[in-house]
Figure 1 (cartoon, rainbow, N blue to C red):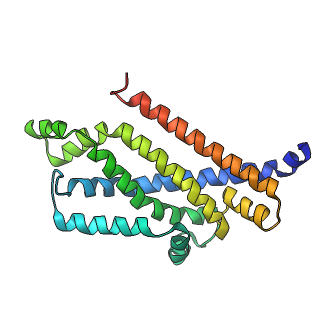
Figure 2: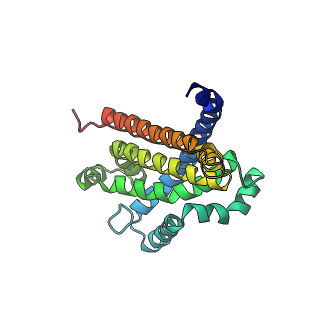
Figure 3: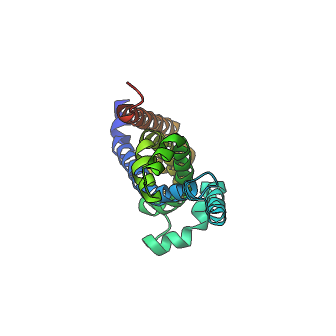
Length: 222
């Protein structure tokens, strides 16, 4: 066992770091793009604070298509775009591009779900006090939905961990790449099982951390 750990520890630590790097950076970019998209879908809905049927339909259609494409296929389809941005289509950094594209519509729907949970009475009270639509978004909808947004972020990040593992099959690096190269190609199942254990541990830690943060700031839980 000691010999096994000595031989593979460095590789597994590097793979874990690559997985966390891909997941963290792509989650950041996905929220930079997906958060305003989710707000737009919510605000322009027929029950939103500024209904715009045509715009809502177009944006919702784009989001639905983005969520419908399997990640492995998406990774192949956007390879030219990835190469244009990063200079190559494979590798840890290159994988961030398709991960971001895949997660953005997912984030948009998670944000929409969180915003729709807000009590409409709070929104109407803000409108009665003369708040503009932008002020309602900035000072009512987003602040009130923070705990739900954080829980949604946990789901997003965990999903990205799974996507990053799938990307390993296409040269994306990280723990998925290690599992494919050693577990499938070299039949070293002990390495594959260990990578699986590490991935499960990462997912559990992410879930616990985000849950604790959400409970800490949720004013409804005392």
